[in-house]
Length: 88
Image (cartoon, rainbow, N blue to C red; front, side, top):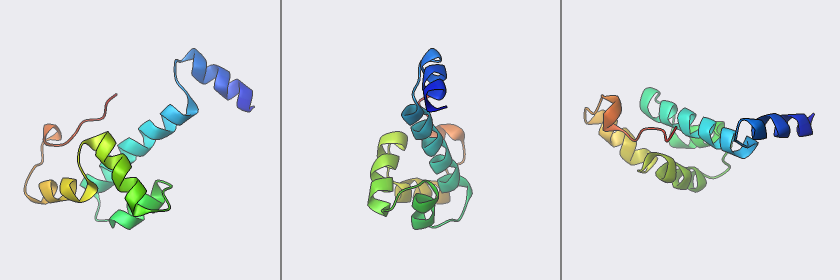
């Protein structure tokens, strides 16, 4: 049930919202750096109805805009440290 999930997540010190945001951040990073999907397609896959909302979230999570991360990747930044690391 919903309540059981909430209780189990609370026992782990987290919430559904936090798990969902962490998952979105990790998927966004993967899609941006390892696929040729359009930014609009990535936003859609992550559940955003607007590209602007995804761009704002990505800036918070990854420290830069999605397009800037892609530009750095194209410019040759390949090491994991060349990109914002997930907070967790």
